[in-house]
Image (cartoon, rainbow, N blue to C red; front, side, top):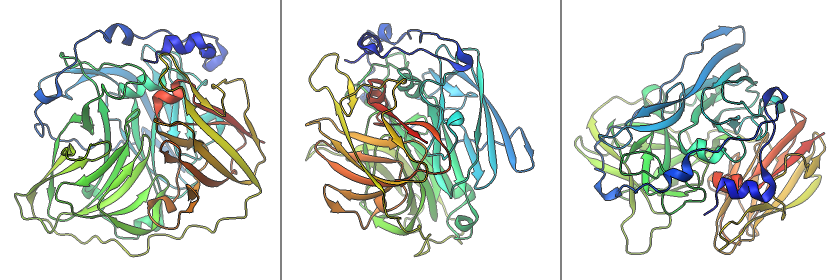
Length: 483
């Protein structure tokens, strides 16, 4: 088991804080809690709790072209498992997190106050933002402190989200609930006629581990122990739908788990978008694959189902042959409803790819079968004082990213930019959801991908890393500087 204490012994202890103070991250209570008895997941009733729809927040105020929000990061108790109260870490008590709906070209300013026992640094995942508001791993909000982030929203529609990124504690803070939704909309998207309003719903899917009192158990690099699946903060919930089209923005907010999602009756869905917003055209598919941090935007048409039908979203990732897939969420068709929405054959036009000027290689690896192993990019553990790559402002680059592990999967996330996936294992990517704008991408053991991005908009230092939070906390992160 990889622990934060072992990581610190390896020489990657956190120092630094907002305001210039040099403070060591305090130890959390997870190591003691690891001795607790796990709940038996088979005793948790499935489809007993209703899946909530995240609350869309109204800004505290609007001034000209800017909306202002403020959050207090705090611990609260909530019902995740039927009949039990669980302590979670939240933005203003929302679990799952609150939902900010923003518009391209309309700035959002968010003040975050930290009333948690550990430092935080809030990152708008997928956002094109200045370095000062990126939520870098060492730009810490200490307990009792606050920081204001400015999001210019100078990018098209996108399915963004925000989460903690304070190095070494991001993994535990996110596991305990510190995430939120951030939908960026634009006028071209609004004119398409896609399902909207009450029929446009974000769903955060993740796994968790609980003791028999219903409290979260956190251990670093704990893949097998996290065996309870949550949808919007409830264990195996149900959701009532009308017999019409719905748009579901699926977010994988798990620390490490990958999901391959299907409808239990084998029906197809239409994937219309991903991390960086809409695809050029919908993709009809019977499965949706999302790794930690990835998003998938899908339309499910329930109009063919009679009222009274139940069906499930199930997970087939890492399910052995002959074993039933794992339930995630149950849909209950409870009523009819009019439906004037549509899914056009053409959703958007992405700009042509410019000619790249620089090629780079990036290698991902964690120690395998080592008790206190670490994570590496290009054989280096993250060091916030080191710049690993210098990028000229405005350059278009192609990065060849390799997972050299034999058994351990990874994924790859770059801050500041959305990228395009050019190749996977030497095969050009010309169809499917990976043709859209991406900021996080899967890399199974031995896989190699090529991605292309143009580094413009802002100069400064940004990180890139495996977005399996536990791997990033183990040191699988590096720094680029755009100059």
